[in-house]
Image 1 (spheres, rainbow, N blue to C red):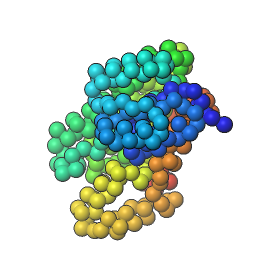
Image 2: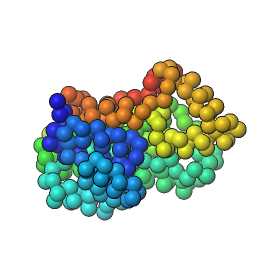
Image 3: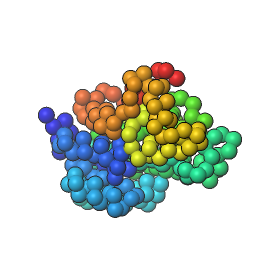
Image 4: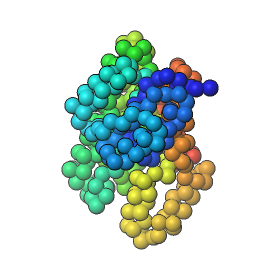
Length: 261
């Protein structure tokens, strides 16, 4: 069964990791997929492999969102699914704790991870409502659900995504737009961002990456890291009609990590 057959879907941050897995999963289930990313070379290669449209986009640019919506309207005439996945960890050389984190890094992280999602929702709602409604899925993080003094700005920005999701959901529901909006909260998925994070934290702890990873996995009740496909399957469900009565919810996909912390 093609669960999102014929629906136009935009996935941001789609050149790799969770975004790429989401784009592939939606494509497998019949969606017309538009992939966006700031990394033009990686995006073009990923889109070629999936036979999907590609838009080079800075999600922190409002004009970029205006242009993206115009391109989708001109190419497809509709938008039914929006997956806001693009995000950054920030400057890997900058301190991340509440006492040492520089304001410049905080602002950069919030501009991409929080304002980028706000701009996406702001500019997609009109086209989605004109398309008969649809589903917005905002990729947050379990960093929004537990304290993250080692990633202060990232956790705070992802928490703002969860709150924004609720506001968008209520606004769309009471406006009669037939647009649902939910947030998903991945745990430790095997992505290039996680690998870079573990390498940095292992160095700070004076441990090997293997030792640090093993210690982290030991904190996950289900006993393993997750794959990007695990998150993609949750996004697919929320994008499909199977979730037609679910809106404003924050759903963790973390192997039980939050339960133990």
